[in-house]
Image (cartoon, rainbow, N blue to C red; front, side):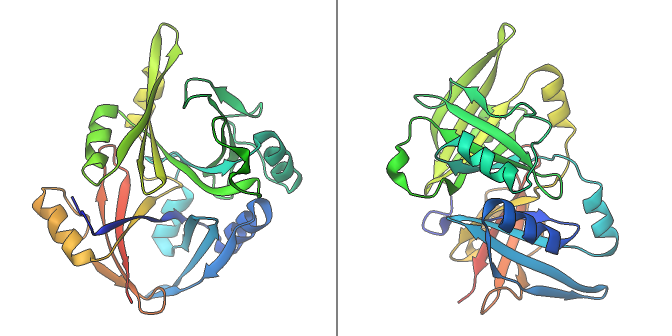
Length: 285
């Protein structure tokens, strides 16, 4: 589906309570740079937007108004659980960001955690707590060559989505051209957490199917601190028509136009198998 139209990942959408605080945190703690700051006029005032980048990783912050802002304040960890930044050396990267004032997330209070079952030589990861409660992972793949760049912090590693049925999730994303590149089982008390990585154009999605109470908690999740992932398309109208023809429900009746970039942008959303929002976005020009 969308062959020749879908061009990869465009950005990650994070609604924020205070956009200036969010911009400062990501710039000062992780080295992100602001490169586009549009706004959207509404009856309640202007919605402030900021796009920041680190390598090939682009995040979109948006500060909503009124009741929508109050809803953002009440959010917890959602359908999209975390995003991961690729690092060469997790120990030195963590030392650096903690010295800049970042804090560990409660899910990894003791620092980097190894998972030897991932990839050919395992990984190490640790979660930071972002300014709105979002989980930001520093992830080191032990099989990759350290000479691939000079900076310790790179761009995208992956996007983490906990799922109720990993096979159903893989099937959904494979129809958009994602291909499974790794699967693993992590032993837990005689059972196993199932995990899989899917890749398209160098971007990785991580799915993991938890057990017991963890799986039950995932099924109760709603839209969270990390709201959506945006995929870049060349023709949003063609994408909209093809997705509707495939029987996938769109959240909008038609693509919406926004005053972003030099000539605007048009987008629409769908929901994945576990309720995660996937945006299809065309930058006009």
